[in-house]
Image (cartoon, rainbow, N blue to C red; front, top):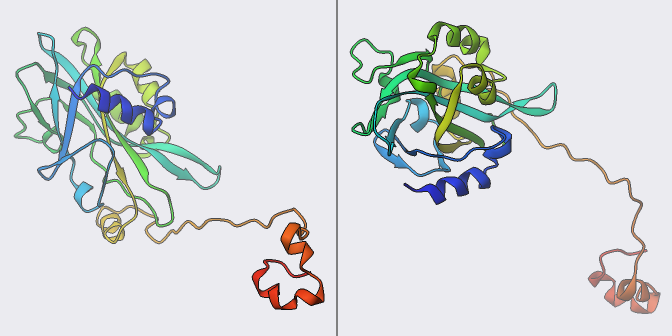
Length: 248
C-alpha cells in the first residue's frame, strides 16, 4: 500500500480541510483510464477522462463489505459568489467487495450485464474546466458502509442527481448515510484542445466561457528615486539616464 504517497497527496492538494475535516486512508486505491495507470495527482486530457476510470482496490481484513464510490470536482468556480464550490461527477453505492477482488470498472456499474454488483446513483459526468480557470482537483473517494448496511439508492438519486450534483458535500453524504471514507486517489483536469468538443458531446453549457484575471492599479503613489538613481538625476549624468529605471 502506497500509504505515504496517498497521505502526501492529501496534504499537498489540501484535500484536508477543503473536502473533509480529517482523513486517514485505510485502503489501497489505484486508478487507470482507458487501461493506462494514473498515479495520484496526474493531469489528464479531457478526452481521456470522458469515460469513467477503473479502480484497483485492496483491503487487508477478511470478510465481505459494501462500498460506495464518489468522484467529485473540488474546484468549481461560482462566478456570482466569487468562490469555489464542489460538484458530484459520479456516485455508486452498495458495491460488494472482499479481499479476493481486485478491479472495479466504474463504467460497468448499473449496466444490465454488470458482474460488479452495486447500484448507480449518479452517472459519470466527464470532468471539464473552462478556459482561464486553474486546474481542478477531481477526488475519488471509496467509502465503507457501516456493518454492511445498504444505502437507499433512490434517496441518493433524489438528493444528488441532476441539479443536486452542484454544491455537493462529501461530509454531508458521510454523515447522512453513515459511511466511512476508507480509500482515496485523485487526478487533475485543465482546459485543453478537446474540452469544447467533450462539453458539446455531453450537452454541458459554458463551453464559450473564458475566465480572465482582473488587474487592479496600485493605490500607492509613484516611488521617488533613491540611492544611485536619485544621485544621477542631474544633467551632468545625462549619459547614464538610459541605465536608470525612473527619470524625474
